[in-house]
Amino acid sequence: MNHPLKTFLYRDLHAPFSTLAGAGFIVMSSSRLAFGLVAAAALLWVYNLTMAAVFFARPIYPAIGKKITLIFLTSLLGSGFLLLLWLASPLLAMEMAYIILLAPCYAAGSPLFSQLKSSEISPLLLKASAEAGSIGLLIIAFSLIREPIGFMALSLPGGVQGLIELFQYFEGDAFLPIKIIPSSAGALLLLGYGAALFRSIRKPGS
Image (tube, rainbow, N blue to C red; front, side):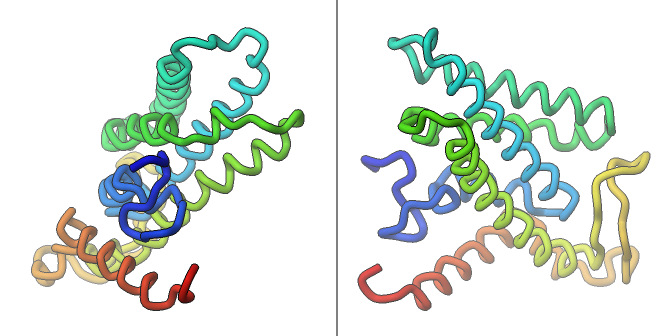
């Protein structure tokens, strides 16, 4: 792929959630709504703080090794988010550590941080929020499908168990067959349906 955001699922469209990395991030972070909300917050945190740091550090930003510097910066900010989550909810931080640390990897692949053509920070932060928000909203949308179907429940971050269940219809394994939806196989199935739906409603020539 010549462009870092060249589509993987949605051909002829540049979108962060359409890359292979974005698909993997969706699969791992959307099994429960609580996880999806935290993953979306981590993306917004990493994208916006990285954009602000790169913008204000332009006079001293290295001309050689920009990608390495960007990876280090995003990883540092992702670790900072994980530390804050650990202070708020250690159990949730343990459950989501791997997912949160994938957010910097995803952000480091974005071309936004190498295309700072604006002399003001506001438009750049808006672009960063739009890109992070698009993948975040898609993760939340998938979570709202996968958790109610697979767990017969809906959760939010918080509580001594790491998440709070707003409701739960059934206990035990009475509906075990539908629990394939929260698994990676179920997420890939939904992702395929989403890709097919997007291509079917896409305007010709777009």
